[in-house]
Length: 264
Image: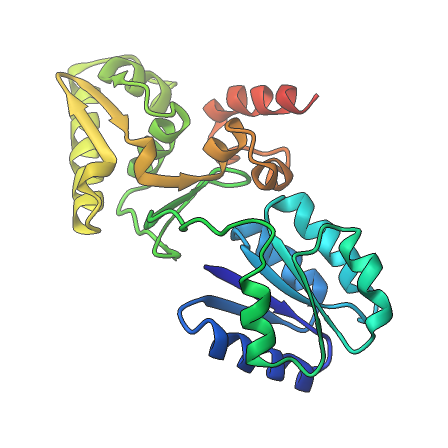
């Protein structure tokens, strides 16, 4: 379960952190003193529950809650404040709960028992692929190292095909668009496929790639990907799209045009 706590008062935030950790010891908890940083975090991670102080400088908790809901509609909002008069307004943004300061373990436990949106298990995917902006690959949230830039580009193209099988001629024409097909080129491609297989296997991800009689494909269900989430209508992924898709690869511009049309 992924939880955030936001309060611009340091001592209040530390008290909230202690109460949440005591009530939910197995959660992933991230604490923020600035609402803007919480929003940036939410754009990269699914937030199941957000404990938000209402009275904050700049952006208050009610405004922050609306931003979080826009990113992921099923984020459970629990407001934390010293002022009971905010209760009615808090529930106008579909809050799951309302806690008065100082926050206690008992109050957090009660709030968790009354969540508006049941929290489902986080996907067990160690491999995360970022396609919006530049193409990047992360294993357990650390950059995955590719020995060759062309190996990384090969993986990028397979990801862009969303699990569709790609034959060697198609891949070679995309990766080396300025070169005619030849035995030497096909040999280079075989080396790239071997290098990609070694890279994924050494990371314990040998099932992320499928090979069958001259065809190659990525296994979409083995990775988390902003592009796939976008295509599935995930609001958070749609909000993260910045007008660029795998920006370092010219062949990706066709998909970028498709994404832009989807937003129209």
